[in-house]
Length: 252
Image (cartoon, rainbow, N blue to C red):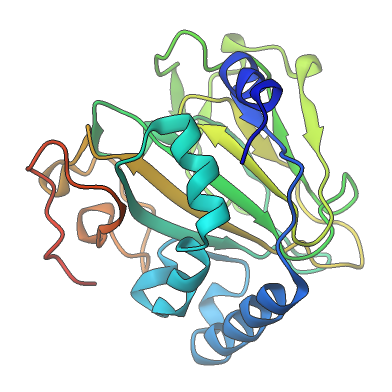
């Protein structure tokens, strides 16, 4: 469970790195599953945006009761998992993730998601750890994003530089098994991996079921060959669908 101080940090800063670590046995299973994914789909060697469409074994991680308890403390006890991604960043070739807000991409209304970011390898400044702007979530609004189709970017939209000061950025460095949790409105990004070591990270996206995932209103495609946001499967993790309007029958 998150401590009261950790909950306050999440509310104030938009993210928290709790005093928690997944056991080595779970990390080993994740690495094995990821290796199998890359063997079957080498196009995802750097980034797989829709992990569960290709391997539902990652649901075992998403159902971890400790993770679900922490997420419940932040967004309530009725929770749906709507996506999981793998940001692999292989040694020397890992892509840059431009500064962005996750919610700029997502067809959720009201917009709400807690992302759990799990370090599979050490995540350091040298290999492109997650960077955040503390407190940038507080207005609970989406800032101006511009489309950037440059090579070497994991995502096509980036925050307008005029909307934030990059000197305020904080690096989230993690050891394998450690996690961070962040709010849907938080400004964040990461640098490319120029080191000799991979920086694999697994993300789990949980929304409160007081929100609706609108499959028919996907705003942005993630690019050719990537499963469209309108095709994501929802999984009820805890509680019930408070709205009664989320579609859990779509299977991809």
